Amino acid sequence: MAVRDVLKMGDPRLLQPASPVDKFGTRDLEELLQDMRDTMHALNGAGLAAPQIGVGLQVVIFEVQRNPRYPDAEEVPYTELINPVLTPVGEAMEEGWEGCLSVPGMRGLVPRFQRLRYRGFDPKGNAIERDVTGFHSRVVQHECDHLMGILYPMRIRDLRNFGFTEVLFPDLEVMDE
Image (cartoon, rainbow, N blue to C red; front, top):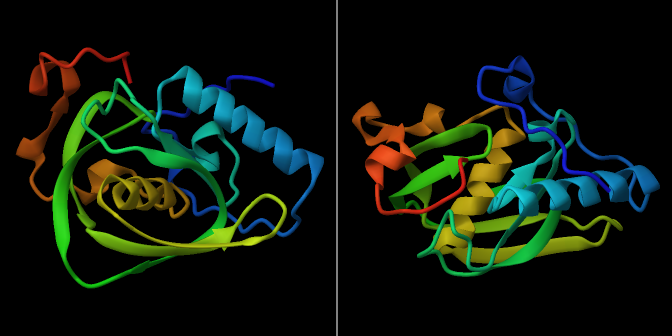
């Protein structure tokens, strides 16, 4: 299909809550997901939310397999998640470095729940439910924040832990995010 332009922080569309998907198994939904896959893979993203490409629907995808933007992250299986509902499992939080295709070239230290249960649907309307930890949990929370109009810098507790990737991690060789 196509690699789409990713909206950048400052675009008001990124701050709008997304609407639930009400029709599964459609050509439009499959084309959206294909464009999201193409875009995420072309930019070495760990995930992508539909609002990041200007589509205000509750659709996220994520996957991590030897990603140069996250060289130490464990693998996360490719997932297409529609109309997600997140439930923290416990209250334990941890801070970790995040970047975002909509906030290119920057990273920030963001608190997230360590354990998470997520539910939602696949493109055909079949239920998905998983309990996850670690980077998988972080990626899901990050992508689902986009569906509520939240970008990761809004969650940073101390802005001294927010800056340009090349300055914070000079030895990390990555594409411009």
